[in-house]
Image (cartoon, rainbow, N blue to C red; front, side, top):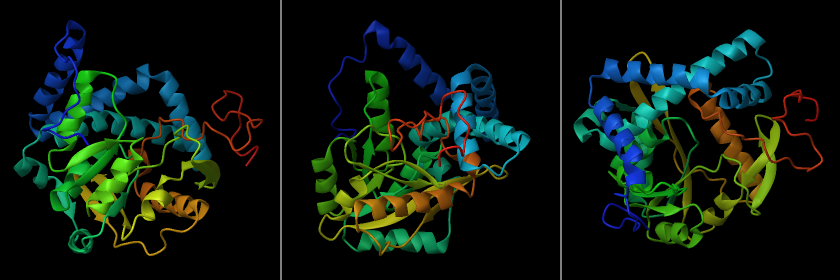
Length: 318
């Protein structure tokens, strides 16, 4: 397990790491500015990303066409643009979660009494808690906000750049215990057996053999079965938690459920239930979810057409 006291060994001061150091310094400087400046910077980055990252714009548009077929072309395009605003804000939100003081961070977090009660009860239970969540653009905000109440262990994908690798470990363990890699199943199980909370976001197309194809927005997609393995740990419980940004007040509402009684079941049922839960959360603010990932890249049948081909038409094979 990695944390602030146990970082992976790496030469972070080689000349090739200079751009990474400068980018982090710039991000830290921007999020130290007043809120309106941060929001303006996020909007500007989103605008630039929309006009430069044409491939990601196409992927986002295709994902939304699949998941929201009821939208007209104009409505879909508006949602794509709103999503890229969230992409820009996501960079700012990472800096906010990593660099803000506790006092400033807490001013931007809203949690209702029921969610607070649910988190505190999960903590008091002494059971390992699998915190099911999704890749919203402000996932870093959620992890820190939840960790302030119930510190836990995060599951993460290591970064090839040693500077960003150490930065994300330090930033993500501001209020939490540590991080384990997404391949360290033993580390995840150990964390649960010790009664910690464990963040789990299995909503990406991870190329793994431990998978099933179950509906997400009615479209069968690859979903990893790690949730069933983890829920089978003795005395472990699963909850759902996520944040939604309120653009009017620049606050983040932290939602958390009580323990979900249905887990564990079969891998297919667990993964289908997980997809339904996060879909309900995403529908509250679809523009804030990470649509620029190829969520539907792996098909149930290799002979099926790639949904990200330019000539693919959503709804033709599902």
